[in-house]
Image 1 (cartoon, rainbow, N blue to C red):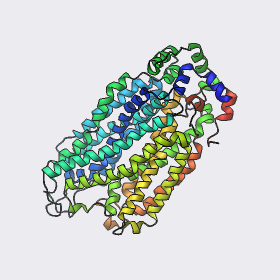
Image 2: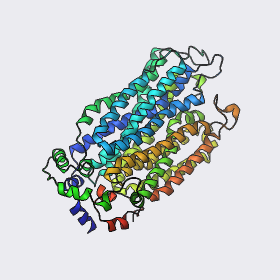
Image 3: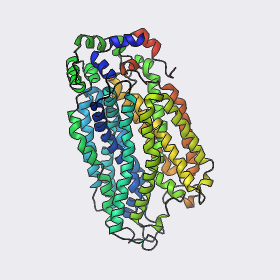
Image 4: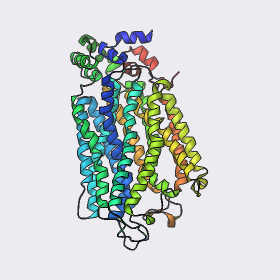
Length: 540
C-alpha cells in the first residue's frame, strides 16, 4: 500500500526511469562513467609499480650494497599526495555537483585527469628533488580530478538506473576500477619487458651503476601517461550526456526539461508535471532541510555516520594492501632481493606479481558484486565482505612465520588474494554504491563526496602509516631511512581489527535493494511517514 502511494506521488519522469527495462543507454552510461573509473584506478595504483624504479634512478648512493630507494618522507609524498588531492576533490566536486548539476561538472573532472596524467609523466628537471616535487604537484591535481569522479559517477549512474538493477549498474561502473588496476599492471609488464629486452643490463650486485640504464627514465613516464588515453577517448560523450532527470526536476525544478531529456533517452513520450514538481520541492517537511539541519540529522545522521565510518575503515585495509603488495611479496620471498636484479627486471617482477593478484583476486570480486548485489542486497554483501576479510587477515597474521618459510609462499598468496576478493565482493563495492542511493537528490552528490572523502582519509592513513608500521622490529633490518616498525605480522592484526570495526558500523547502513531513490531519501513521503521510517537502518 505504501509503495503504491509512493508511486502515485512520484513524478512520471522518475517513475519511468525506475521501471524502465534495461536499455542501450544504461550500457553507454556505464561505459562513459566507467572509463573515468578505469583511469582513476590506473592512475592511483600505477605509482606503486614504479616507486622502486624512481628510487634507483634518483636516489642512488655510491658504494651502497643495495639499490637506491626513496627516502621515507619522499616515498610517503609520492604514494600519498594523489590521495590528498582526491580527498579535496571529493568534497569540492561533490558539493559542486549538487549546486551546478552533475553534467556541467562531469567534463571538468575528466579534463583535469587527462591533463595532469600527461603532465605527471613530463616531470623533467635538473635535480632529483625537483623531478619528484613536480611529479607530486601534478599528482595532487590529478587526484583532485579523480576525487570529483567518485560522487559524480555514482550519482549519475544511480539517477539514470531503474530500481530493479540499479545496484548492478553502479557496481559495473565501480568494477572498471579492477580493470584499471589490471591494465596498469599489464602496461608496466609490456613496457618494462620491451625496454629490458632492448637495453640489456647486469644486476645491481654485478654493476651498481650499469644496472639502471639511462632509458629506464622513460619507463615510469610512459606507464604514468598511458592512463590519460581512455579518459580522453570518453570526454566527447561525457559532454553530450543530458543532465539527470532527478537533478533537473527535484533540484533545478524544471519539469519540462527533465521530461524532454528523458523522452529522448527512454524513447517514449513523457508528460511534464511542473505543478507536481513545485508541490514536491516546496514541501517544507520533506524537502527544505539542509545538510547541517536537525531534520537531516534526525533522518539521515546515522546513515551518514554508517557510510563514512565503513568506507574509512575499509580503505585503511584496502589501500595499505594494494600500495604495498610489492613489499609483502619481497618479505615472503616471492620477489628476489633487489640487489640480484637490474632496475627494469624489478619493475617487471613487481608488475607481474600485482597483475596476478588483480587477475585472481581483485577483478573477480568486483564482477561477483555486479552479478549478485540486486539478488543478495548491499547489507549482506558488506557484512560478508568485512567478516571474510577479518578471517583471512587473521589467517595470514597468526601463522605468519609459517607462510614466510620456504615452500609455503604460494599458500600466502592464495590467502592474500582471498582478502582482495572479499574486499571487492564486499565493502569496497558497497561503500561506493549505497551513498548514491539513500540521500535526497539535492544533497546526494555532497553526501557521497563526504563518505568518499572519509574513505580517502583512511587510504592516507593506510598508505602513510603502513610505510612505517610494516618495517621490521629490528632497526638493523628496517629499510634504509626508516625507524623500526611493528612488522608485517602485527600490521595484519591491526588491519583485521579495522575490518571487524567496519562490520560493526555496517549495521548503521540501510538496505536499498529494489527501492526507488525517492523512497530511500523520503522526498515523496509525508512527515509522519518520515518520522516512522527513516531511523530504521538494518533491513528487516
